[in-house]
Image (tube, rainbow, N blue to C red; front, side, top):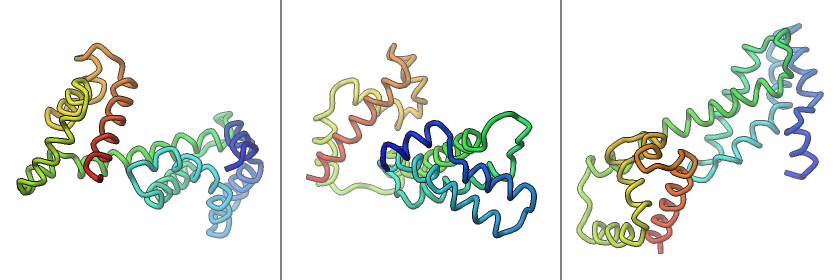
Length: 181
């Protein structure tokens, strides 16, 4: 995405999207809805790009389109906000909801309880886990085995939720690198 495209998204200045939404609101049909979805494509791709670290980009794009569709159905121009601004919240919300739903399925506690690992894999996992810092180990343990939220972990450790998220991301990335080498 070029700087110019990013700037126009950040400033919610996509007149074609706004126009297509108003056209759809006047005459609700499949052709007008398709035009809205096409014009909203940049917003969906923009927000999907923020979150596609551990989840497939295609799945995030699909979730983003669901958010765009919800925004189109619920938008009220009398609220005094542009459609782009309104849609951003729905798109991000659907993407985050999808990620949360997926992460509940792939939690390490779920996997460990579902089957037993071979001894070699346990050794590799133990070695990789040993390479983490004390705080990374503690955060991972509290989040995945004690089922704390990031906010609860932050309160317990005396740091903010954003710091917990950053340490977690760095630790999980480090584990992934250790296990895939």
